[in-house]
Length: 336
Ligand SMILES: C[S@@+](CC[C@H](N)C(=O)[O-])C[C@H]1O[C@@H](n2cnc3c(N)ncnc32)[C@H](O)[C@@H]1O
Image (cartoon, rainbow, N blue to C red; front, side, top):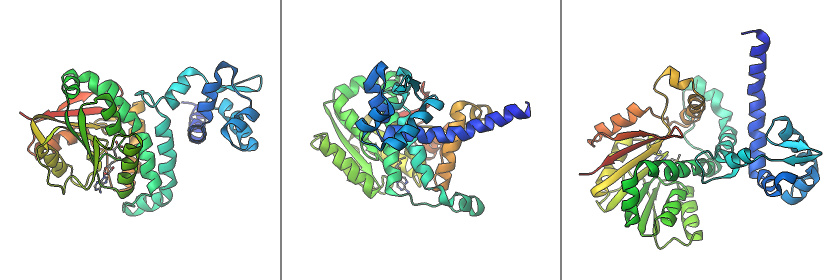
């Protein structure tokens, strides 16, 4: 490769960092949402500032940058958002939704002030601020969409069973968004969320109350590995959580103990690539970056083989691994 080409590629990386911030601002300030509402006519910078309640100067700069970075198109001084960009950045119910990933990437990186120190000492930071966990909730909105669009499509029998009712537990449920989505989709279910972090428990309870679902969703404060679980659930679910727990084997054992006969254990996660070729894909690149953030806080994404080995070590049956179209992995085990 010529030096000039390599130079341009690395410049792309720098502009990519800036573009991530531009997207973050556009999502958080509601700029993309306003542009979408405006449709084909778009908005001038002054209109966008006015409808979003932002200062005209910065918005003028954002509009120019959004056009330069091809996030939206400036035509006759009006910025227009195309349909595909709007879907990817704004449509939370679709597996393609990336708006939350942009928010999470920016918020996570605000905590990286000790990253150099971590590389020198290998000592993780362990504690993240509340804003980080709030951004996790935004990130895993995509996982909820993947569950509903892809995991349920792969498990038609489960859909039938959930429709008939039953009891479901979301283990380490974060802000409770999956529970709320499940309660709405399957009106006969009773649901329990277990969550370890104080602020996430509070957010989950507040969201459940705001959705008027407190009569069907209970949020328990605790760590699944330390709780005595009794066999009264038909489905136990881990979403982007198992790999972060201090002892995934004990957590799996505890989840298994919570299941009734013919109950199902589901783990939805984003696996660390198992080969160099898999790392060299777009998803591999993204996951490699996410892994840095995980290691920084003392957790780690796991390969599919590693997750499978946790099932074995916990004395559970071998889980069936389903590779979902989005690239997420689903591990399924059923009690006899
Ligand atoms: C990435 S969050 C995912 C939350 C939720 N399932 C979701 O999809 O939004 C991971 C969860 O793992 C749990 N967790 C992380 N570190 C933990 C620790 N050291 N001890 C116990 N639980 C922990 C927390 O409960 C946290 O909510």
